[in-house]
Image (tube, rainbow, N blue to C red; front, side):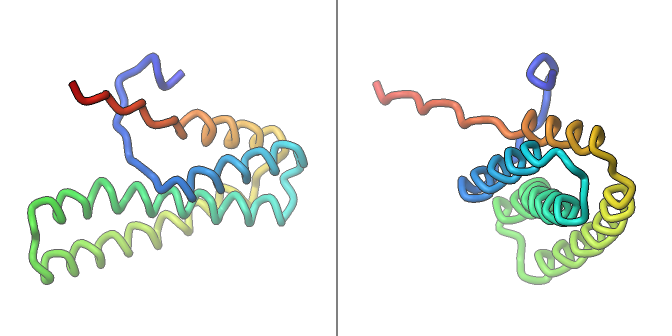
Length: 122
């Protein structure tokens, strides 16, 4: 569905991609929104959120060679956003049922894309 729309992209490390897809498959096989599944899903969503926040908010500052003071202020603001996000994620996931778990797993799988092949030098 996402690939039929314009979208923005945030790169994630290969290790996080592998772990995310492994977790999605593991939770999909179990199919139960029990406490362990919710904890694993929560941790995965938080890690993906942290990677996205870093890319969209800190990476532009790194590319602009922002000073330590600016980077510190940005990190503090992002830390506050992440803290608020964690509270919301936790509240939502606490009420997760098996069908909703499957829907979230589908969404995570949909937003993780393979990198495009590198163009060969001419």
